[in-house]
Every structure is written in C-alpha cells, then in structure tokens.
Amino acid sequence: MSKPRVAVVFGGRNSEHAVSLMGAGSVLEAIDTSKYEVIPIGITQDGRWVLAAGDQRFQIEGGELPAVDASGASLALPTGGTGLIAYDQGSIPVELGSVDVVFPVMHGPFAEDGTIQGLLEMAGVRYVGSGVLASAVGMDKGYMKAVLAAADLPIGRYLAVRDRDWRVGRDRVMKEAEQQLGWPLFVKPARAGSSQGISKAHDRAELERAVEFAREHDPKVLIEAAVGGREIECAVLQSFGDDPPAASAPGEVRVEGGQEFFDFEAKYYPDQMSLTVPADLPAETAEEVRALAVRAFEALGCEGLARVDFFYTPEGELVLNEINTMPGFTSLSVAPQLWAASGLSYPELVDRLIQLALNRSPGLR
Image: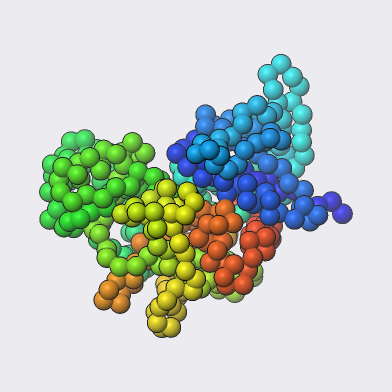
C-alpha cells in the first residue's frame, strides 16, 4: 500500500514568515519517512506557492532569519480536488498527485487565521489543526477574549481599538484606556503572534507610540491592563474519537535575557528564556490550569492542538491571557516541550497530529 502523502506548508505573507520556517524545519526532521511520503511546500513573502528547494534554509544563521527560497517550481492546489499541480512560465503544468493531509506550520495573518484552512476546506483536503472559525477567532485577540468571556473564563481587562477608532478619535481612545485600564498598559496587534509589535506603555506619550508601533503590523490593536504575576502555559491536544481533549502539565516561562516581557527575541533567540515543567504550583492550581485550558480549547471549537497562556497572580488567581491555535512548533518551542515533559516526544506529537487529521473529514463537523 502507498504511504499517506503529507504536505508540510510553511512561510507566508506576514511578519511571522521566519518563525514558520523554523517550526517547519523541526517538523520535517521529525516526520517518519518510512510511514509518510513528505512534500515540503513554501509560501513566499509575496504569496507564491513553491516546491521547496533542496537547500532550503530553516534556521537562524549568523543572526539572519530564514525565508522561503523562491527558486522552486510554482505550485497550485485546485479548489476542485486534492491534486497538486507544478507549473513554470513557458512550460506545461505537471500534476504531482494528490495530498492526503496538509500540515500547515504557519502563523499569523493569511495563514493561521482561517484563510489557508478555508482554502483547504474548499479543496477537500484534510489538514492539521483547528478549522476556519476557531483559527479566525483564535487569531483575532479581541474576538478571542469576547468568546472566552462568554464562556465565563477569567480574562484580564482590555480595550479593542479598530482602525477608524484610532484615526478619528485617538484622544478618546487614550482617555478610555487610562480611565478603564490604568497604568502600565500592554499594546499589541490584534492579529499577530510571536510577540510581534508588542510594547509596554507607562503614560499617554508611550501609549500613543505603542499603538502606532502595533499598527505597523495590524490596523486593529488591543490595549490590555498589565497583570502582575508569573507566566504559566499549558498545551492542549485533541483526543481520538469522543474522548475529551487532553492537557499537558503546566509550565512556567521566565525571561532570562533582560527583556521586560516575553518578546520575539526572548522566544526565538538562544538563552533568552527558560521553561520549568512542571511549574511550581499548588496541586489544585495546576489542575485548575489544565481544566481552564481544556475549557478554552472547547469554547473556541479548536481541533488538533493549542497552547493556552495564563498569568498566576501574587494573590493566587489565574488570568487567561490568550489561546494560540498553532503555537510555535520547533522542537524547543513551549508546547512541544510541555508535551515532552508529559510523556509525548516531539516525533510522537507530530505523528499524533497527522493521524488526528487523517481521521477527520473535511467540511462541516
């Protein structure tokens, strides 16, 4: 019997392009090629799909972030079927055959936000991870918090600022933020990840600069009240059949590189953060973290995997910060490390996600 064909898709048209490549490199190393036929596919920064070149670089080298090599053959995925077509200008298109499952190791807009999931649904192709709605809601932090609050989950105070809100009423926005949330404040793009575009503001001047900085990534911005305490993270994994999702042991993230908060460098450059698993928490608090993480996963209707981030305050309260439907996925990223400490190795996690995707049908579920 032929092996299932797995297309690992990476890159994309957003500021998390390099982060996607780093995760895809780890996935490609971990996939059992005796069990699966693997097709690496890159999406260039201008949106072109290409068959990955043999010398494609996936890691940071000499401080330089990786990018998709655009020299490979261009690819198309017709929405009427699961077959890949390779084509180049002046040549006859060549059908490469069907794909059984897509593993989209992608982050940010035009990727993790339900767009590629919608394309794959239209093509009738199975894929790893959450569907269109959960991906879109999980990507937009404003709607995500609204859904979490509706599910009676503990979230921090925030203000969602749309493009028009800022353009015609920035003074009003800053006054509302100061009165409703107090100082200091965290400002972040509503639809970006990997801590891109985030800054901390202690007064109105800093807040204005922070919003403008976040708007370089997304015209919609979130302003959040600072929550003191420790950063606790928990990974959630869908189970087979009708069993409920499983939660990993919680872990604690600490910034080691001198940054004031968990920014891009702390996440992706060496020796900038540490992860302790299991986190040093009272037993009942650790169980509450796991239960809240599963509730968040189910509130959004997630599939596959997710990472849920919390603050554990000095008063002993848990505040749910956000859920990430396609978390950083290198072998050293937080979610894979949480599962490794919980007894599921990185190759086993990759295989589990592929099998979960193969065992579900595209379309309405």
